[in-house]
Image (cartoon, one colour):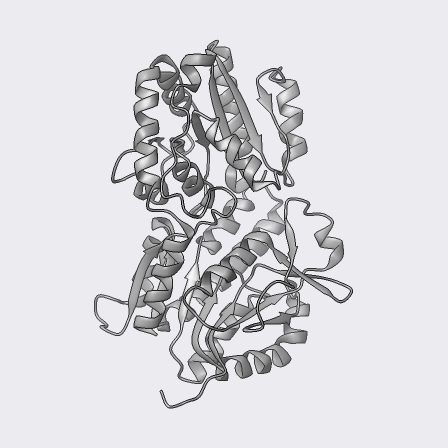
Length: 417
């Protein structure tokens, strides 16, 4: 292209900024992601909505860091928080104009879509279409299906509204993805759901890839390519350490996770289980722990902000137990494998793909708590098999480093957009 661009890449993200007076903050892992992008792009524009402070206070699980240390080659653009339909349309015209200017100033365009009202990445992609610019789309879950799962137990009125929004969202994302030049779909679930929309088989100028996203800063030293956790935790302690790290939200099915743990407890299995995280279902989860009499075997330390301490939690675990029920790509599974912890949980295209090379995990049909409890019990009964599984997890996780996955995405963006 003959244009002279001010910036190499524009990123429009849903991950929000936070503003406190004159100081701008960013979520810790998004901050790490920007620094990894700078390994491959000399300059960036990052545009994202600013979360209202009242909502910040309700989400203590978000770790915020100031952006002062980012170089001058990174331009941060604050967009409106517009996740209500009236707020969205009130700010749409002005934000479209801003995104249009940013697109004109940027050589490469990447839009991380994932919503409906207030999804500025989707709006930016539509603006890019109008300008006849090539662009890439990044997704990490099938959002129109995820919100349907979240409304399963809602009132009839809410279900009707969510069904309508899911329909609109699916059509919006189909329009954005079907015309994009490059689809970067995080995990096999999203890849399977979206790559068909691009018609890659029939169109040589369309390219879809299953990619992965991991933020291993402070989990591993940068120079490490492999980790070797203690493979004899169970043999030396006499009980298995079960671990999970994530939000207490319906997508993760924390009450099903607890149901599995309860089945193990009823079978007199020797274990200790930890769920590290926070979220709207934490109080309900802890109430069920007490109701089931599991206080002696279940620990809920809350959100662990110290990544080095979180790494210690991973490395002291024997099993990473998960009960994900929606088509998404949870980074915690990559973190577990990267740190040599076998993933044991509900089957999905995403989880299956992660362990396809070495078999560093055990998967059961989604929603089958009894089968999952039996799978964990079988590992408790066979320490040798568990240790063998840990070795396989290390091998499966070796390819997942933040530098490697970001360099792969940068290479694809430069090659196809």
